[in-house]
Amino acid sequence: MLELFGSGLISLWLDMAGVQVQPMQAIDTLAWQAGPGLALAPDPNPARNNTIREYLKELETLKLIKPEQASIQGIWIQSGPMLMASHEATKPLPAASLTKIATSLTVLKHWGPDHKFETLLGATGPIKNGVLEGDLVVNASGDPLFVWEEAITIGNALNKMGIKRVNGNLIIVGKFAMNFQRNPQLAGQAFQTALNSATWSRNIALQYSRMPKGTPKPQVVITGKVEAQEEVESSVTPLIRHYSLPTKELINEMNVFSNNEMAEMFAESVGGASVVQSTAAQLARVPQSEIQLINGSGLGQENRISARAVTAMLMAIQRLAASHNLTVADFFPTSGLDYRGTTSARHIPKYTAFKTGTLSDVSALSGVMPTKNRGLVWFTIINKGTFVPGFRSQQDKLLQAMLKQLEPTTASTDVSPTSGKKTIPELGKANHNEVLY
Image (cartoon, rainbow, N blue to C red; front, side):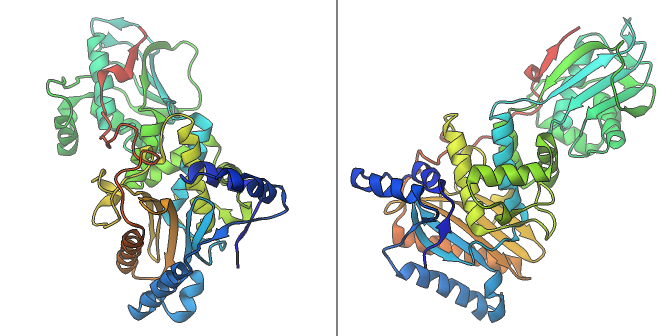
């Protein structure tokens, strides 16, 4: 039986899936969109669903699932408007970190790919002979990747301005996180430590060693304590405006490492989980009932998304990315090009842009795989059961088997990183700071 969809979703798939609509098909496409429901064309190769049945049977044979657990395994595979295979695809299931696809989509729509979060540093007193006679104030807007390197470069900027000592407190205002620690007191203490190289731990020294050769070691001593405040005093003199990496790089880092704290900060920046849920459903053009979220990271069984909705959200990201001359691979790890984070120990076909998801009893995978015979193949697999490593292995084998049938192709420009490669972001660069004093 064909899957039915809300009117309008086909246009997104036709645009993004890499399949051109022939002139004789255009009238049929318009007729589909005008109707009360929308059916995807079934795969002309009926053996495709046999492949999924064999996949599920293999899970039973390997004792990864029991026969009655087949109903909680979600699968959706399509190319263009063509439904290649589905199983329990409209049922919302615990999606783990596939939730970050919804967060990525909403953040990209809200902020755009080039937005930079600002962290403003200011002083409540004069600077005399290398000493700030007053408090150092940090007013943050939610940079989700403010880490040791960024703090070190701020310390060096303060030294360059002539500040080596603060005879006052470190005041934290706004949404400040340091090394993914969102408690303002703890984040502020870490920042205070980073500014004074004499207090560095071995871990900070290691991160410093990865910065460009010749980077100075900051020496800013803060004599007071760390305090969190609700508002900035009107008497604060601006010193430095610090800029985060652009949103496109931040989203990619979040997904490469499946960083839960970054996802939570991102979700908070757009209004919370409820906003992510409604916005993602609207942009993906799927029923809101198929996206049920309690947070932006995917932690918790209560985050439930259907396999169909996950695929639609990933395709919506591709559409938004294309409007900025980017691709989905600029926001997610790409097999054969990324070798960090969640790509480790996976055997996903080369040039596939993908996102993984893991809970104690959930293993999920979604992405897009370029093929020779079917163009871009979009897929989502959500497995529920207790042996996660076994699910991962079978997911990879399923994709490899499909690629063998459809034949591999070289990297597709439609879903390749725009630079042609994946690069590690440059943290702690001096040009992340704008001196205002």
